[in-house]
Length: 360
Image (cartoon, rainbow, N blue to C red):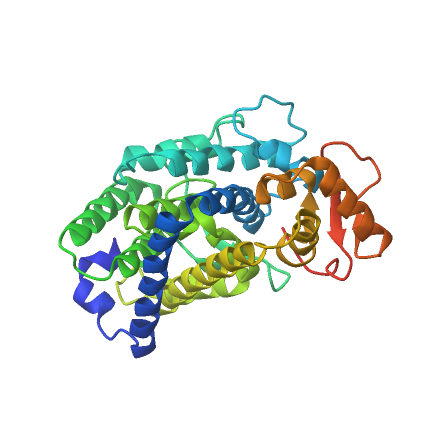
């Protein structure tokens, strides 16, 4: 709660460029409202695509990676399955938590019980460990230089509950008082949450879930339609650097929130730009034949690895035989290749020329 002890100090001296960025962010929020009015079906398609990307990316930031061939199956809600390893269990836990946030109407205020509930969902498929505050001291460390380096020492377990309760209450009071731009208050909340590091495992994923929750409560719906977690994964070095820089001096309330706030606002602007681009791409498919729409989608708008179900979801009304005709033509032309030769419902294709790009 160090950021909320003196908001005047914390948020004083806001960089001029950040003010302009926040205004740009609010323009994106306004355009999102137009999509709700004019293209609700399009938003449903984008939400389906974004959900899997967010689960995959937020997990991958923490090194929780699953076999791409099993990813879509694991992302299906409510399906019982045999897990191959702990990564799959944690992947499905994030799926459960993000699904609960996305379907909640209305979204409840953030509270201690709610935070622990999300954490319990995160680890609901593992052998315990979720839904409890840490009982031992934890550290934020880096192995980037080849050896273990302590980047930040969070408060001890004896202080965790009081600090977390204080953070929740202080943030709620600041929001109620309209003390600052809502995204700046979210940035301050997440920075303090990660500095407290209240649970033994899953702090980063829990923080990203809370970011989504708080953004939706504040009226910023972009996490539904363009993966904020994917943007963070793609810029994870900048993500960690911004947090580290803003946590410096946190214990003494001498920290500088602006590196982290600037990163978060920039990430949200990029997500809104992605939403605009994907919505525009869908509009550009109008007027094309069904085969042309499939070809354009696969080559220019789909993820680099695409499956039949992805195309079916993105292009409702186009039959599976039509999709297969185009996939065969693109393969024969050397534009795509199968990820493996097993075939079946989970068959996947990758665009040739995109194979060197890194994805979680």
